[in-house]
Image 1 (cartoon, rainbow, N blue to C red):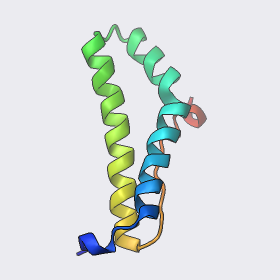
Image 2 (cartoon, rainbow, N blue to C red; image 1 turned 60 degrees about the vertical axis):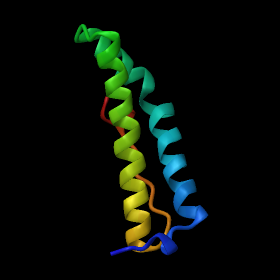
Image 3 (tube, rainbow, N blue to C red; image 1 turned 180 degrees about the horizontal axis):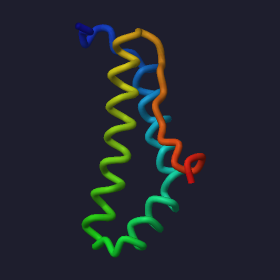
Image 4 (cartoon, rainbow, N blue to C red; image 1 turned 45 degrees about the vertical axis):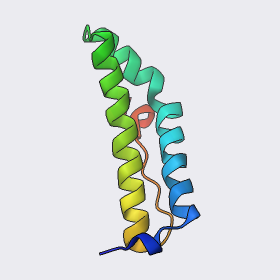
Amino acid sequence: MPKLADFSASHFAAAVAAFLVSYGSSAVIIYQAALAFGASPAQVVSWFTALALVCGVLTLALSLRYKAPVMIAWCTPGAA
């Protein structure tokens, strides 16, 4: 089990990079999909929150586990 002492600036930077890449690459597609489904503003916010949290938490967890920066990002534009 990783310890807090194993946490470094590179782990945090990888999590922030994943967050930014996920939003930058997927924001328009996720927003358009939400509008097409008739989602309310609260639902759209929850989609973006889930997008950020999943990418950031997975990046942080894998970076701590493998002791190297590992970035997780959505590939929504490639799938679309």
